[in-house]
Image (cartoon, rainbow, N blue to C red; front, side, top):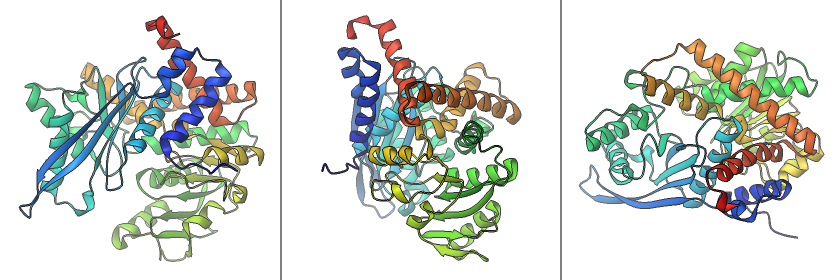
Length: 420
């Protein structure tokens, strides 16, 4: 029996290959879309507060730009790998295509630990990234955004560095910026809100009705997990019964208040120990008998080893790559509807696109308009994937790949038929 791979880029290629086979893609286009178009590997030397000079390794992967400029976040993480960045750049390509916005896919990363850095050191790494990679990106070529351990402040430093280098004001070089310097209303909760809209639509098409009263478990209580819990409970009436972070989870069958749990976590550093709850492991939270499970933290948390124990009716993937291909098949066989990551969490890049539009026109929208436009985009994308998966009789992730890969492949044909 073959070993289950957990390499994210190999997983992304396997998922693509399955879609390419069904679509009967031309060999040239298949080869083109299976690998990144270009990569930049670089070093960022930084003089630390101790006086020592450290050299940090960085990457920027531009996976595909046939539908528009590459789009994707920058991650600062001590365990960053280029294969993770490649996979995320690929998924960004399919993500922008599945929600049908005129962008491609990219991703960046620096191997560092922001938790161990002073604000000055973090600023030096941020500006160093832009000094080194600034020639590789532009508002018309590749537009970064925040991701793991990067923030609107990091984006502000990067934009300022780019503006200094190019002697002008280019707010569209980066998204996820503070509102005061060209950010968009509604960006903070966009990823979770988009996932919530998809969850609402999934509940409808599966015959489960409205979300009111539905039970929810959220693995990962960072930005996306917190806002997902808050939006589902406060705006749709669902009952969040379990949440977790890196130190463990909590469970209360009577329901948890997202704001209160977030406040407790700010004070203590973890959700564990929240009054009125019982402790539960990150592994056990995945296996709770709930209506909706939201993996909102790490890759590869649902594998062939535990997929058979999942009891939720819907798995809404706030996180990137939480489910392996082997697990996908098991969940589909069990009748569990997976809202695949590059559809479920596409709200972030969609509002980043809205930010680019607002930067380009120098006219900024109210939060209500951002949410209305996001709802329309996510709802349309969900149903395109649902219709495709029903038509081809495949699981939703493969349905999403069929929609997005077909769109990118058509752009390749139109722009350069020699790849066909």
